[in-house]
Every structure is written in C-alpha cells, then in structure tokens.
Image 1: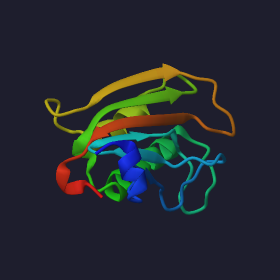
Image 2: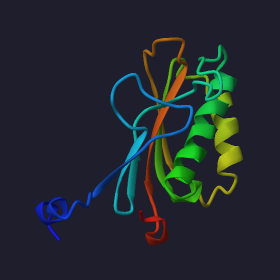
Image 3: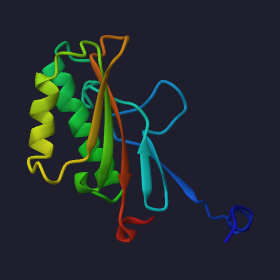
Length: 142
C-alpha cells in the first residue's frame, strides 16, 4: 500500500514515541518508528523524576541507560533489539561511567550492538547524550 493510500484510509506509516518524564525543548518525539525500524532522537542524562540534569557523569549515564530501557519498552521491544548506539561525551576520554552502564546492559561480549563515542560541546550541564537504532520484531508492531 502506498503512503497516499494509507493516508486516505487514516493510517500512518510512522509512529512517534514519547517517554514519560522525558521530553525535548523542541516539538520532536523521543523516537520514531516505521515498521521494524526504530530511531531515537538525542537521549540525555536528565533525571526523569526531577527533570534536573545531575552534576556527575555517573548519574547522567545511569539516566541515559534508563531512558534507553524505557524507550524500547514503550516501542514494544527490548534492549536486545538495539543494533547501534552513538554517544557524545563532554570529556571524550572519560568513559568509565559509560562502560559500566554498557557492560551492565550488554554483559555478553558476543551479543552487543555496535557503539561509537565522540567528543562534543554540550550545553545545560549535559555531560553525555546518545541516540540509537533498533530493529524491532513483527510482534512489536503497533
């Protein structure tokens, strides 16, 4: 079915996914999905309860990975569906907190997604950001 036919029937091909306790300042969702493909926007370390940015990289990393878990659950998948994650770090060389959370989420070295980490100039007290790509199974389709 073409996009035009779908629109005429009131069906949408793309689904926006929002997260409880997490939102962007701009009018964008936390992620979008078409079929089995899920792509997130930037996920930060903002605390979902207080909506404050914690001062430490450890706290922000823990929140980023919590947002990842919540995002995949909201999309009907799990962290096993992630194919790639990209991280931006204020201090590119400081990866201890990132690696701790990474190993907790992906303990099996033969079953990890691809990962890229890059240096970035982040604002608002943000020390880390990430985005991800996941491929969800048919059973998770909306």
